Image (cartoon, rainbow, N blue to C red; front, side, top):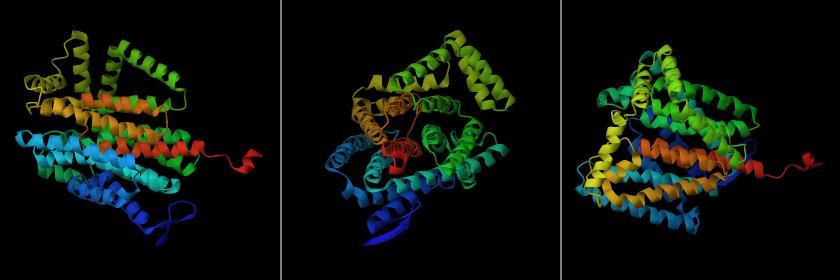
Amino acid sequence: MKLTVRFSSKKEPIPLKSACAILFVIALILLTFSTFFQGVYNVLLHVALLGMCFLVIGRLNQRSVTMLIVSVLPMALLVGLSFNNVSSTPIAQIGFFLHYISWIVLLLAVNETFSDGQKRFLIRLIIVIAIISNLASIAVLLTDADASRLLAGSVTEKAQADYYSRGLGGYGYVYAMVFLTYGAIVWLINTKNRFEKILLIVYLITNYLFLLLSSYTLAIIFALVLTVAALTTKMQFVSANVLLVTVALLIILLGEPLLNLGINFAEKMDLPWIVKRLSQLNEAQMTGDYMGLTRSQLYLRSLQSFAENPLTGQGLVGGHAHMLDWLGMFGICAIPAMWLMYVFCREAYKIGKRKNFVIFYIIFFVFTFIDTCSAMQIPVIVLFGCPLILNLMSSQETKPAPESLKE
C-alpha cells in the first residue's frame, strides 16, 4: 500500500509503514523537544520509542541488529546489579539505558529508510520546536531569573510541574540545546536555502540568550567550545585540530583575565549564579586548591565508592559526572556500558560522514566525565539530531552537479 505525503518541494509516494514511522518520529520529537511536555515525557517517550523500534527493526541490516542485541547485555547487567543498590532501582536503570539503545536504533532506521527530503523535514521540525521552547523558557526566565537553576535543585514536584507547564526547559533541555548548537552552526554554514538560514539564525539567537539566562556556567562554556568547533568544519582536519588546541592553550594561559571578564559581564547582565561559579573558579585558580569546589567533592565521592568496592561499586555517587558515577555505582561492571557509549557514538559518527565530526564526540566524551548526561534529551541530540543533520549536509556535498551546471 502506498501513501502520498508531502515532505519537500515534490510529492514522495511512501509505503504506509514508512509513513507510520515518520509519524512516530514526529511524536518523539514533539515529546522530547517541547519544554511543555518535560514533566510527563519520560514514560510516554519510552513507549513511543519501543513502538518505533519494533516498527522499523526489520529495516536494519544484520550488523545493526547484532549491535542492538549486544547493547542490551550491559543494560541487563546493570539492571541486575541495581537490585542490591540502594541508590537506584531496576526500573530506573532500565530507563537510564533504554533511551541510549532506542535512539541509535532509530537513527539507523531513519538513515536507511527515509529520503533526504524526509530527513530535512524532521530536522527542520526539531529546530522549529526548539525555537518555540527557547522562547517559552526565556519568557519565564525574564520574570524569574532563578527558575532554571531551581529545577536542578531541591524544588518540590509541585513547583517543577508549574515551571514545566509554563514551558521552562530543565537541565536536560539546557544541555540538549548546548550540543544542538554544533549541528545548527554546521547546517547554517552549509545550507544554501534562504528559509533554512533565517530559521537557523533565529534558533541560534534564541539559543544563546536562553543558555545565558539559564545560568548554567558549564553549559555556557561548552556552548562556546562547540561554537568554535563547528566553525572549523570547513577546514582541513589537521588545521581544525591545530586551531582548537591553540584556542585551548590561550584559554589556559589567559584563564584569570578571561574569568574576570566573564564575572564583569555576568554582573552587568545580573546573573548571580554565573558570578558565583566563575568567582569560585577564579579563587581556586589563584590558590591552586580545587578541592574546595563542590564539583570536586562530588567527583571524589564517586571515585571513593569505586575505590572501596571496585568490583560492583558502593552506590554512593556525586551525581555530577556520568562516567565517574557509573564506576562508583557499579564498579568495573560499568565498563561494558561505558564501552557501549563509545560504540553508539562511533555509529552516529559514521552516519554523520564528516571527519571533523569526531571533534564533536571528543567534546561529548569530555562532558561525560565532568557532568551527567542521563537526561533523555542529551543523547537524543548527540545520537540522533546532530548525526542526522550532518548526514544530510554530507549527502548534499556528494551529490553530482546538475547537467546545466556542468555545461
